[in-house]
Length: 158
Image (cartoon, rainbow, N blue to C red; front, side, top):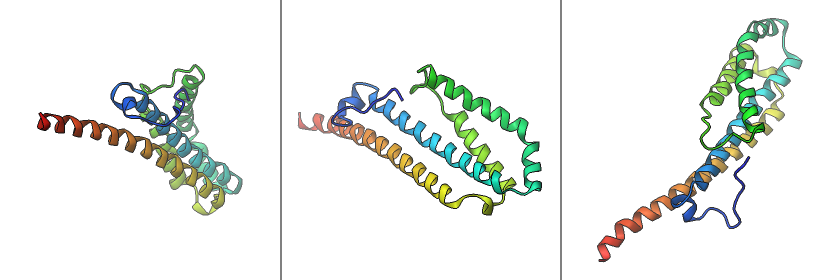
């Protein structure tokens, strides 16, 4: 995305004097959400090669709803293409898309028709991106608390 890492990593001034740390946290959250989408889409892809006709017929009836979700994804991809996907962009609708597809998959597709190794690989990648997101936020909170502690301590010394 448009928030490259700085040499030397996150520093206190990135939290207190600019919005860089917030931008990096949002970028990490986008990566996590995209990995969640890749995971659920990968399950659909592998399930469609092994699915029963009954399950396929149920999924076909959901095509109009799925098309609506696809338009939401297209909207985010268009923002990314135009370099307008930034820290101000809400990811709430993308989260809803991921949840929608997870629910459709769990209700309409048997778990045993998915490629377990691909699912595990994608899920691990999702966990890694989630941990990265947590680490970025942990750094932000740590620097913020450090500044707050200094502000509390300084008046006592005077």
